[in-house]
Amino acid sequence: MMNNVVLIGRINNDIEKMESEEKTSYRLMLKVMRNFKNANGEYDKDYIPIELTSYVGSNTFEYCKKNDLIGIKGRIESIEDKAIRVIADRVTFLSSNKRLATQS
Image (cartoon, rainbow, N blue to C red; front, side):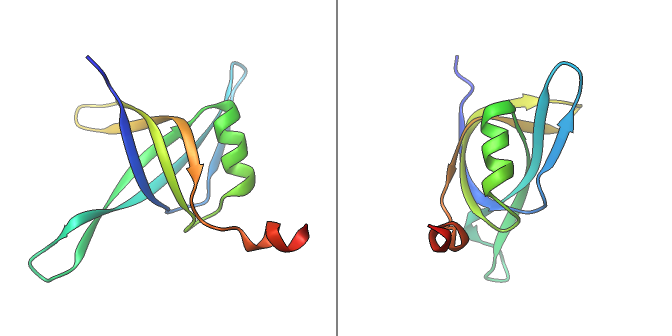
């Protein structure tokens, strides 16, 4: 069996850095649009908690901000009765970052 998930969405909050003695991890909430419209003719959104580990998280924390478009590849992990989160193994930056382009 395989537990893989691929998501594309926008970062909904400032990325949180969580430090402990064992490891550093990062958390964000990914806003993902559904691919169909509701009864009002609007696209609903799902908010999915994402946890990033050290290397992937540090780059994302440094280069991304709220509302940036990113792609996530990872696995789903259950954390409570019905709650889940995604542990990201890979993050792809999909928004262009004009600040970095103008500084070169």
